[in-house]
Length: 106
Length: 362
Image (spheres, rainbow over the protein chains, first blue to last red):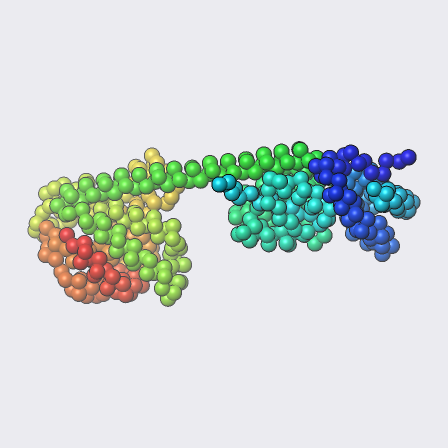
């Protein structure tokens, strides 16, 4: 099973506070990052979409959401370099949804 | 009773709330955290006295004004240039790091944040900046002390010359005080704003000139007693020798300039005053017959004050005039011996001059 949330490193970052970590994960869920990214891509706003992918990458790194982080990085680079990203976006959607399911189980 | 220690302020600038919250959590134990979600707000906070931070953690990619632009603004403003800035970067961007370093960033904080390393890096930079500030203010303080000592040494030398002229040593103090009153009147009365601007007068220059006036007659150290102390009118030949005190004075200052340099501008004004304080507005003075604004402001200013003080006090060659008599002579010499604007200003503050004179008469 993919490692959606690396609880150990995530908790360590917030000094072991489970309550804060859960709160931050809740913010990630409420942030609707994926919807925003898809909307920007659909509108053809490549620059803003790149920035959004960058934000998702950073937030995911800080929350130790490993799969989301890895895919957001790929999308950011694809958008920056003008390479194929169409297939990556649904993959990120899938991973994000799975991550949210994991979060809600905590 | 427990001592309350004010925590240092750290500003976190990041457009994403989650990142800010994590950083705040890492740092809030040791610092007072202030947050900004964009560059504009960050600059506002930095420029507000109560929230001026000790260090700034700055995200690069932000909508509106990005981190590089914020960094550039901070570094180009002397008021904020010394605040250490740590850029928040993605770990995969060497390009940003090199650009950030060139723009003056102190260090980087890679995402994902590492709690212990992040804390330690920030603490290092805050300590370093504080240490640097302390050193700078210490150097400033010591330099000012040194300057004062050396100005005082020169003043003592000038006083020695004056004692030799059988004057009381008060002439130097009075001309400094009178110069200060005249210059501050010029700088505070708005109708002299253009004049002040034309003569590039600011508070630093004013201070240096006032101090420099003490040395205006230092060249008299090279004039023989038979001339310096002669109670009668000087012969033409004797007067020619007397005139050389301007040149001698500027040569003495030149010697000192060569040895010490002149970071504060003080000696440059000393030399101007020594050399040119017997020049006249109409170009008939000595030693170089400069006219009007060719004569440096410092010397034009001192010449009025010097003549006034010589008039109202007794000298070996003349009795003392009253204040009103002296003012008449000065006013009559407007545009002949003296800068007309300075005469006007001088007349306006003459009531204050008179008060000082009463207290300071030989």
